[in-house]
Length: 293
Image 1: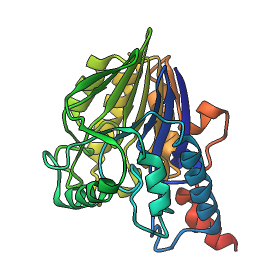
Image 2: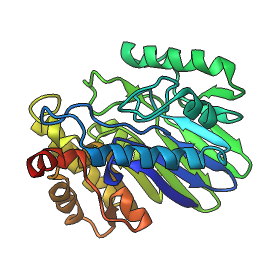
Image 3: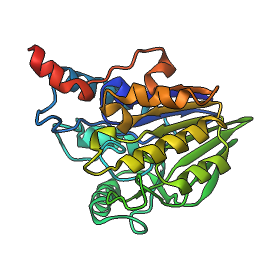
Image 4: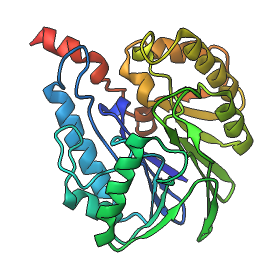
């Protein structure tokens, strides 16, 4: 399988958009956005540049995709039809992504909070005018060509007590290789999510690390230590782990990754390294840009 990261925090934006090629071309979580406020400041110019670049990468891969998957309904994981400064989307962008595609999407009715449910209903309403094939993916497996695509049941967005709702992971099996994309599991913090990942036994795991910048607000120190322990356990079993997204919104992310790597001989990396690029943390450094101007 060929894995191409299109938009991640290590590429300067909020996203986990990934293009995976088997005998099918699969576009996973095709959204890209910016944090409207960090350190009390709006995005810096370089962040908008990264937003436009990653939007272009998603739009470049959309026409050649056979399948689109959506893990949950936050704007950094799908492209809405609504115009927006911090999501850089338009009706034309969205239609190009979803037109003539097999869409495997998280159920908009079950295991979903009100915020995500509203966004999901708006997306489905807009998709009424687009030629597409929609399937709710939660807990189901599908054979498309020679590729097997399996989705988890709804898992918590971080810890079990999270108010941010639920998501589904996707596992792609082709020939003798297994890749798993576990979007906003945040570590994983939840022990049940760790056990599910181990059961899927991927060769490559792509997941979100814990949002260190929210410690003391929406995240406890216990959550961080649980995420560290669970990621360490996964790294001892899985040959390659790509950890990115929430974790890289804080410059302390590299200390966290190093602390896990010290306990494992297997490879931990950030998404940009998949395409031989140095991590380009922009939101985490936003205050620096304003101080330097």
